[in-house]
Length: 310
Image (cartoon, rainbow, N blue to C red; front, side):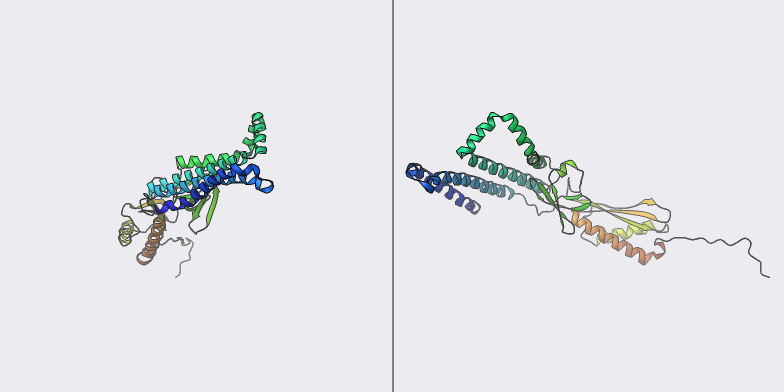
């Protein structure tokens, strides 16, 4: 019940203004000067109080609903999906409430109401003007709703966008914040993600495959490398025990390319695991097979016209 205490203040304020409105309606005719504007000011405050109460109520409903979902768990795909949808829908609802409240306040002015009647009389021209002026705002709102429904990404999804790797930190109606791995923030418009391609590494699950590439001489024993990879993975908690593969992925002119695939429970752990495996495998090659490090061979041929010494 404590979470509903935030709603008490806006309700009390709004009800007080309503009762004050009933009182002012009876005595307003006898007021002159500045006091004659009090009834209209009271109406504006009532509309503001109702909008305030609705926004607080939506926040309470959101927090109550999200209590059943823990986004801090490892397997948090469903929780992140729900968090993304609810957060965007809350922002859409708040936007509609604010716009509707401002519209009702403006209509409470007699002068603006008369202008509105004139606009409706020429609705064709006004509709075109309003359409052009509100094109970006409406497009952004629709983009936010579309992201909430289709969910090309969710909160804390690992993404690669504009050549940067990071996580979706914040989703708003008009912009998205990506927390880059070095703690910088990349802010992009919402419509960007509907118009341009990007990579989502955790679209269907939180676990990831990490790749490590090693370049060695042709003399490297691959079976020994596989045994060392097994030993390295068994001594670290970063590996989730699902995938471990060592393959010769390419053979170049002077070196052999070896690709290692390992799996981890999430993207940060996958990064740490890749770095760890790369370091330990390089140490293994340096220690056990230094002759198999990348090298360039030069063959010197003896001249056939070499003089014979007697």
